[in-house]
Amino acid sequence: MSAERSILTREQVNQAESRVGFSHPVLTTIERNLPRILHLNEGYVFVTDSSNQQQYIKGHYGFLADALVEAGPYPLEPIDLIAIWARVIEVFPNNYYRYDLAGMISSAYAVMEIEDLEWKKLPRHYFETGQLPEAVTKDRSGLVVVQSRLHQIGENLGDIDFYTDGVSDGITHASDLAKRERDGDEEAARELDALIAHQKAHNTPTLSELHENFGNGYMPLSRAVGKALKAFGREV
Image (cartoon, rainbow, N blue to C red; front, side, top):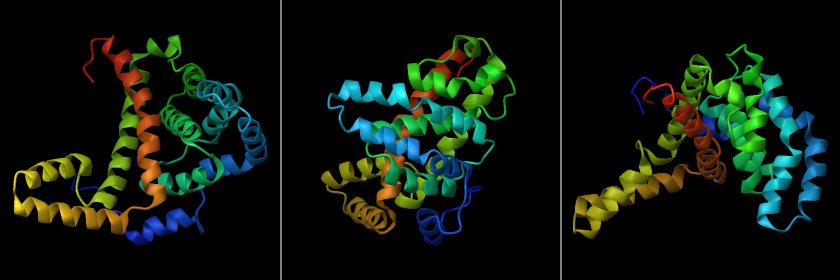
């Protein structure tokens, strides 16, 4: 986390999770479509095979991708992500939904600055097929914009991780400390205890789900965009 970026406070996190006095176009989109979402969720209960469950989601929830595009433009700052995910956890019952929704929200945010209508089709197309539309893979400048905006999401998720861990890249740091502790490093053991205590004091179910769900939701899209850019000879 760079020194220029602001650090989240416990008060900000609590307020975002409660959503008291908080509004956001993504939240409005969820509420506006809530009856349809809940009806589809009821149908999902009767789909038991995991592969069929994923097909059910991709075959029935594409309208949300279009709605999220239409709801823009909107920010996705750390507190926005926290507030959105606090509601997502309440409405969407499992990780299959949440991974896909993270991808939808990320892709809708990523294309907002691009006027070309072909890009507006990306969120739904990628959600339903797992592929970038062929037309956008030929638009190098658009790919650069999308990759940049996905990077912004990654930085904002990093700010949330910094809040929960107290350090940048807490997983790697904890792994390194644990290894040093096993090798008999007493200072590393004390640092690891402090890191674990910080995580227990700052992490919440919402933040934990947010980290995991977005990691599985937006990273595949980011990799796909990076691969498309490399086809132009650009290192990403």
